[in-house]
Image (tube, rainbow, N blue to C red; front, side):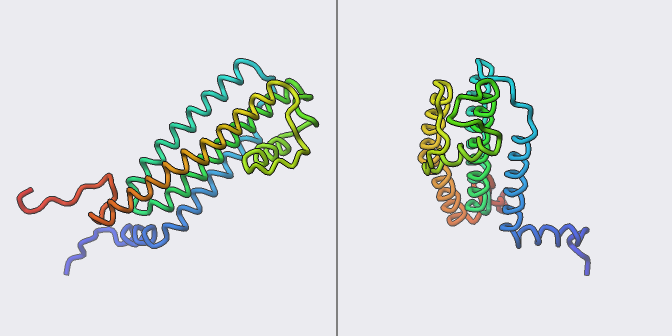
Length: 197
């Protein structure tokens, strides 16, 4: 009997990927989040706040929006939309928070008195997360007008991220599941054509 698959190891590898989509999603998410945070710590960001920083922040927010859109399309085409959604949210959230952290680092690089205390990158990351989670311990607060404006933008962005983006991602998962449930195929695939072609 002839072997229909010329490369049995490739077929086995494909089965492994299909068998453990959770492990793949977890690995991709972890590597991506760690890489973004490592870049945050390594990039030179100590040049002071100005128009360049404002444009960087605005451009970064546009990039986050583009990535969210791309991730939603990937969710729609995924055979595992819930796992893809977790990856999308982890990537979007990490990029969003690190983007604001980078803006704060640039701000305190030019104005160390922008907050109630001197901040290093870890302090800034802590501040960004406390603002995002609305915990706001009060140990770090914006003092300068620029710091208050950026913090206000972050709070509004947090609400948009939590409200709109989360809703869009959840809707994409539901739509993808409906599509897979009715056709058995992800959104971006077509059913095989019959004998008539």
